Length: 509
Image 1 (cartoon, rainbow, N blue to C red):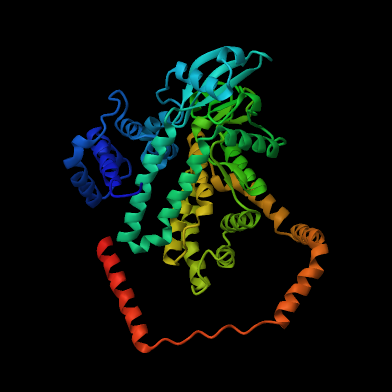
Image 2: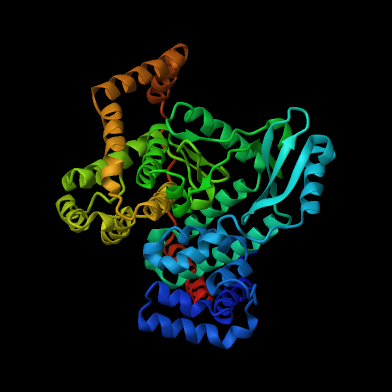
């Protein structure tokens, strides 16, 4: 239920940050202005006693986030890749949220597997280890299939995770409603839709069968991609709460020193991570939307290995073309083109001035392109672009939330490997190839062929459809006249509407 009882949950969030000592650390990390510091402390300190204690052995912010639950852990995972936002020290503390959370007992995991697959664990696996990784949604065990002797990873959903997420998301919905009520200007950002989108993502992540399907489709799409591996699922040994897949050995993407010691070219790996993400998003419209350090490893031969396909992003072909044109326009510093694409796609209202919008976009792009390579940031571009689109009345595009968020996360991963990486240089060949393939004469021919194929499928129905439309136009009946109401009836209806509106306004106030 999304009622006022959620206020306690939101207050407890601030109280937990205060009690664990995380409030000051978090405010310092984001360099919060004095007013925000004072407000946060005044609101959090009186309720300190309501906060969760957390694990005192953990750093303050990590301690607070793990105490608050899985939805907050997801948020912390994103911040762990943004050392440029929260600082290297805090980013390092948050990185443990990716795959080093406290595991639940192995006996519990075995019980879940037996209930899900309806066979004893010993009958399915000749070997079954203690947890080798534990994250917010599930934990992983290393095992060996008894029938084939093949080494596999067995992922088991955390007990009670659905109820925990449901509680947090209800509080987020309540907070979004308060924000929209108190700040009408925020409705352009569609906070309720954003929370609903997050809810749909995490709900899907809790069904391992969907993750297995996503891994299978992703593997098919990327089978011919160089230097990229995906552990494929074992359907017979998987269910709603259990996912078994190939075991893939590699060094953690977040351990830069270990990668260098093993002889890997970290600059090349960083570049490859950026390019793989863009290839999957633009070419396939189906991409890994949770590409943080904990879900990426590097094989002995230098291949990038991706894990955990619970959160996947999907964008249609038209949106891909729009996104590619916007990126390409920025890469070429063609701000008129970027502005025109925004207007043609309906991202910016038609009543705004396209020339002024292009000039505002120039103010976004030029400082970034004039900066040193280490300061060229896709995240900065998105932040500045957000400010510009806010001024021009552009609403939040919920279908692009995962794409934008993943771009920021991927950039954070790449920068942790190579701080001097030029993001635009890495992105340019992928975006350029996509533009040539999908926006030139070849693309027009492909689109025309699709239209012809569609007409061919519906060909047998076209004569009847045309006949029906012409008959309806020829025999159209005039719309029935609406009886006029007496003036006093209209006045009464208007007064009633006004009274109801005032009443609702007082309730919301």
